[in-house]
Every structure is written in structure tokens, then in C-alpha cells.
Amino acid sequence: QFCSYCIIPMARGRVRSRSKEEIIKEIEGLVREGCREFIITGIHVSSYGTDFDIPGKIVPSDTFGEKRLLDLLRAINEIPGVDRIRLSSLEPRIMTESFVQALAGLQKLCPHFHLSLQSGSDTVLKRMNRHYDTAEYLECVERLRRCFDDPAITTDIIVGFPGETEEEFVQTLEFAQKAGFFEIHIFKYSRRH
Image (tube, rainbow, N blue to C red; front, side, top):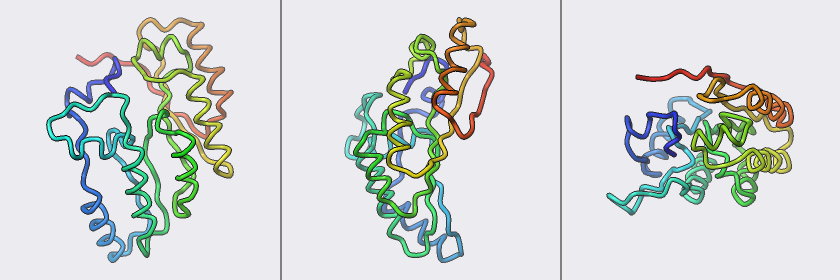
């Protein structure tokens, strides 16, 4: 996503997704060994599969792998012996009405959603180069609460981002209360050299 504070795109490069077939084969093998719960994780899970069929092409930063991620999750949901599926951190913008409703149809999916917030201040989010504002984020949270019975919604917040004012900090505190998070991972901004 090329957030202004993040080195990951420079260090790791563009999205690289494992094939659905490879993931399914690995999970089936782990089920045979007794594993029952699987966490789908990665640097940018929301972009799963956006690199397929387009070798060398740059994928726009606002393109998400909604269809391919759902396809993968549905396939995992059908594997006998898989009892629980969890998702790691997701970008709020993937939480469209159709995506959330589709997730709600997966009986093995645990209703825990980690949506990266980073700040509850729109001006800080803009400086961070995040691609949503607090109103969009709150819509995602409300959508999840409509489609799931008491989901656990967790997030990350960075405090002390360069230029953050006391007023912007207070906006983040107020937003966190309004969103009603189950848990917040709080990070103090630190400059990397």
C-alpha cells in the first residue's frame, strides 16, 4: 500500500501469492497430521491473488484480491477435518458488503477480524498515506457487526506519528471508543534508519 511510514514494499517487493492449489495441498497434509485450525496470513492478505495472470505488471495499490481470497477461503472451508479458519490482518477497504456477507457464509471462519486502523484522525491517516478515512473504517466495523454475532474486532494504532498533535491524538482515543475494539495493539512511532 506504500504507507508513508512502512518499508515493507521496498524490502519485500510487490505482492507474491502462493497458488490456491499449493495452499490446499499443504492444508490437506496438515489435516492428516492432526491440525484442525488454520490462520491465513501474509504481508497483505487483502491483495491475495492480485499478482496472478499478470507477470511483471504493476498492480494498483487500491486493488484487492476479494474474489480470489474468497475463492481460497471457500475451498479451505470445504476441506474435511478443517474445524476453524482465521484471517490475519486485513485492510479495511476489502470489507465491502458483498465480501462480508460471503465471509458470514463460511461456517468454519472464526468471527475475529483484525483491521489495521493506525490512527483515528483523518489528517494523520492522510499523512500516513492510508487509503481510507475514519468514516469508511467505521462502516466496515458496522458491516461486520451486522453480519456476525458479536465479532471480535481488533486493530493496530501508531501513536506519536510525526506531526501528530494533541487534538489528533484525542481524535484517535475517541474513535477507538466509538469503534468498540475487542483489543488494540498500540505501537509508538519509531523512525527507521
